[in-house]
Image 1: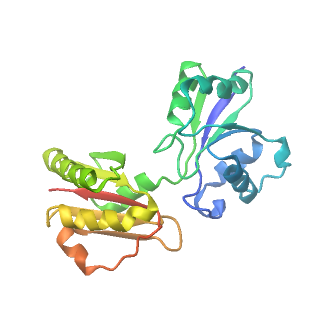
Image 2: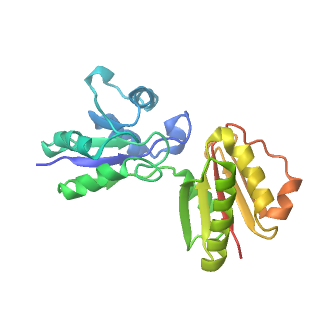
Length: 235
């Protein structure tokens, strides 16, 4: 009998798992002895916060991050093929969404392994829910280009796409570049384009704001080194 690949969501910050994860996720985590993670140290900290009752030395960890090669996926799958359940644990949010776990999930399907997603927070989905923009048609771009000229060009490109398809455009930025991203959006987008920013979701510092671009100059929001998701819609 093959094991199951459980897709284990994580908190969106270094927070108490009991605040944002269902009890069923915590219960399943406590049953598992094999986890596939991006960072073992962070994973161990999560397990402690989740109340893992056995010694962490008894837990086996496999490493999967943006540097993992396709040929390195098979060893991660082998324990599951031999009957062990595995928990694919995201660093933040849900596995497979803006997360390097998608290749492993696809490998599990190809190997006939049952894949079981669990309920948990996703900053991308939560930001779309809260933005009040088009939740029927949207696209997630990940990170926009880091170079200023390329970033401005990309902003104009996705605004045109939003207008053409009536499609919400969703993207993220490294926390230390958030303030510059907001400035570039305000200076580049059409004044009547809707801009939504969701910051520090699920935390006590959570902030969600949607307004037309021309209105944003009225707001004072410090995004420096905060986790944020940006969305735009050109109607």
